[in-house]
Image (cartoon, rainbow, N blue to C red):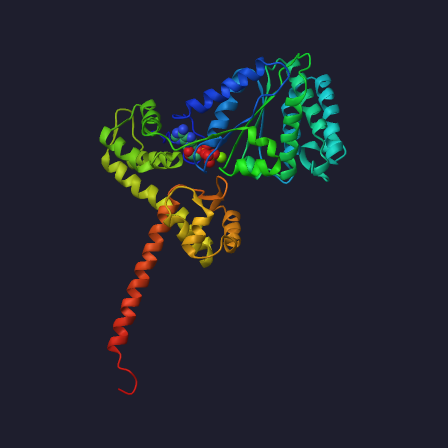
Length: 413
Ligand SMILES: Nc1ncnc2c1ncn2[C@@H]1O[C@H](COP(=O)(O)OP(=O)(O)O)[C@@H](O)[C@H]1O
Ligand SMILES: [Mg+2]
């Protein structure tokens, strides 16, 4: 018996299909480390939930660390705000540094803290809540980053990389400070550079570009890389390789079938892999995963996904469900808001309230300008099936009512 090598719901150990994205990040980091003091364009990995953004970011972090860089990881969306979190994480990364280096850093930390309105560097780890986030100066934060880079270089780091996950959840003021800081650093005439500038790599939902440009229009020029569904080849590797590593093979027909079922959705790849592995009895080396395992796994994985979809559907009010039905009828691609309005025969404006609450519930998200998309793949198909069930139920009850009316004599007859 061997435990499943599949990584459902956790960061993936292998990232087939993401070599291109990782290579582009690596190239950007190398270029930054070699460049004079002038930060490069940040790269943001965007895509729906379950597409492997966090996995790409973690792997980029691992490689950057292996290359001798200092990495600072922040998952955006905390109470304290983005800038406070970055400051706190840098502080934490520095705990093993010699006192003199930390003292230098603390001086810069205090400057940032003073501008965000919280006195006392000692509170940085726990209570750094900006009282006047708007007042957070980009110059101070820029100085802080500069100081971080200088001290990191003294500790033999080749560079400093900020990694920001779930960037769409960051507070507006924090994003603005971050963006303006980057602009400030990029527009400065290069100093006589002694240390490389910081690099910024982020990840977020497809609405990240909209969120960022609303915060600071300059972020339009950042590089947004859309993580697409895995190609059939990549999905095949993602399923076959972890098994082969443990001496277990997939029967070719079963593998082909499994690849088809996943449609390249990375989360489903892992879910299906895990169920097939279990159904094959947590196989020992030499065993084969066959067609019956894939069939059983498909049933289980689909039913788990359906539970997830049902939960989301039931959280929607009936007005929101009508909205979702109109949206799903248009297909699986992002839908223009005007299209939904046209289908429902209302003005676009009339849809702003269901739209806002569905975004709030995490069921749909703004995509390109004026477009909406579902946050999990497969949900549109689920909505279409529920809607057609309901239509059929409606039709059946209408037919029943008609029959009953025909059979029931009118009073007085
Ligand atoms: N390239 C990949 N191949 C196969 N599975 C992957 C890949 N990238 C991510 N996964 C798996 O997909 C799921 C979602 O990954 P995650 O990185 O958390 O996505 P996101 O951050 O986009 O929501 C996890 O179960 C993870 O193990
Ligand atoms: Mg993630």
